[in-house]
Length: 318
Image (cartoon, rainbow, N blue to C red; front, side):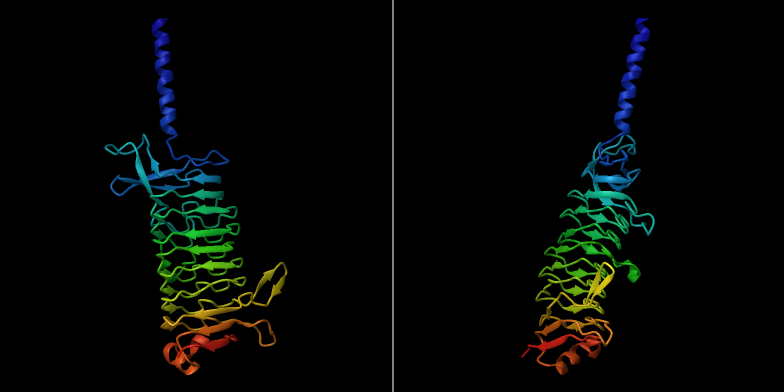
């Protein structure tokens, strides 16, 4: 009898140990009790994380992860460096098409790959780490309830080989802060963010690529920094209005924008408005600091930078 009891105690201890190691640190705080999935990378020196069975709720990605299932020789705890994988696409993004409501990405994570949080209709809050260095195309696209975002200064944006980009395409963000250190905004990055009103750009910004802010019809506050060099094609196209319920507001909220003297290139239709000729809403005013007249600006940028723009242009250069 005593031997039987000892055997049962041993079995009980083993079951407890197995259950603990089967639920390693890094569990997502999820309404459905889902678990994050981890994959060893970089020669078994770090992890990347994906949704696993997480479907909804708040997700807190851990800075470190340990697992009894780690390969032989791997340390007990390793840093989490990536969200998603370089091979992710429209349907394999880390948390693609889930009902998660908030996500905190810890310091140490350097990469968020393509479509990582795209098509998350309930996502309202995202915390990004200062360590972030890379954001893949459409990472936060089509997140209508996301209210604001602060993007760290070391972040570079994948252009999706020119086919996708749109990191925040049709996101619901109203407030955007791009931190000091960011030098370039990729094609389509904030295209059709219809609720975006306030944008803070860093003094380090050099390039705003094609369609970066096109279709942001509620934009009211943006200042282009001195030091900016390139404004891409249709970068600020369609700032003339937005839908409000079933009605279309054709009066642009943005009063004016200043192109600093440092700008050497402005792409075709950069301020295209596309309104029918019979409409007469408030017009955007564009101040040009680097040129004294239209002839000078056109000689530097070509005539097509003014394509389909009814803005009032005031030249203030010497």
